[in-house]
Image (cartoon, rainbow, N blue to C red; front, side, top):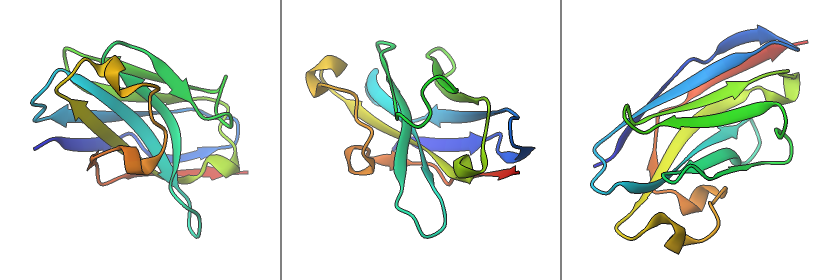
Length: 130
């Protein structure tokens, strides 16, 4: 069973930066997607950024140029560097994963939709004040 534990959330002023981490364990296969999602009160959960075990990345348009996702394969730790934060970025941020028994590219384009992921962390809160 894959387990994901996020950390690094907090409060920051608009224009500031935060770095989120997600420690993963329990992978059965070495092929996987890992992603960051967020959910603000009253809104649906949305994909922010994702990366696969080959290092390919994908970003939501709203965060391109401001956020950077990275993966330390050896440590099985996922990161999200968030820069130039604005109040619209405030949300609960979740780490998610999907593993595959087959080469990861057989899954096609890296998913950014919540239903494409099978494992979830408990979330870490990000607050941005104006």
